[in-house]
Length: 348
Ligand SMILES: [Zn+2]
Image (cartoon, rainbow, N blue to C red):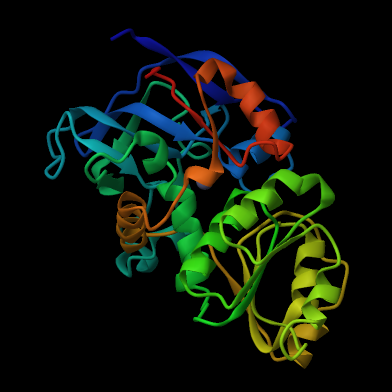
């Protein structure tokens, strides 16, 4: 092993402050493993850090990447359940307060002191990453690193639709925003038996809306959402809206589209102020539910769903590339040409 490795580093808040740098190999502690990265997929949040305008704090300079699967090459003295050679995926909560009431409830994703890979500590867009044993899950059988790396965004979607959200069979569901998280939320809603599943975006989202149809959406719209919903069923609106854009107009549309006593799950986030009244929430007695990240039981569930094929990820994987080709992948994910691009920093 060399003493340095190429890492994709986010070094400042200014837009496009991301570059490949020579980085030192991580030193692991007693409770950590050293993971050789098999595949790391690009997240919308990696793109946000690249483009600037984020609502979280980054420990600059920081190697990007938190959607990762790989092989353990070294394990610390206190590591009990894993050993060198094991194929694993890693959760994202790299640093948590073990004594926080949220950690003790298993909701360490909501621990305010939590630091994640790719912004709080060095992430996985490199060859080797240091991971605490606590974060690891075994990759079942022959599941590829590329698909296993998508456990993270699928867990975000599972938490939004199946834990914080309550999509029941027959519910009419609207997903606003056909980015990777929106599309994976649509997939989860479909699995939950959504009666009529609508995904909406902008005319520029044509490719992603085509993927939404492939995933089983009954309608994938680039406009005319309210007209469509007024014709649906009794015309009162959809039972559940998943807001996956993070821009304020998304929540406004959600409030219009949801039926009285329905639910809005907000999984998209961004710093934009609202600029409109929240009165429709009151008038319609709507539940507005936030959803953030995921925890251990969700990861176990989602991994088994991917391994069994119940969660078919083929339609969302549009590119598998070398780390050197990161910039093209970032651009094409941002433009909507790729839903998900996956990097393999160690080659095949
Ligand atoms: Zn992610």
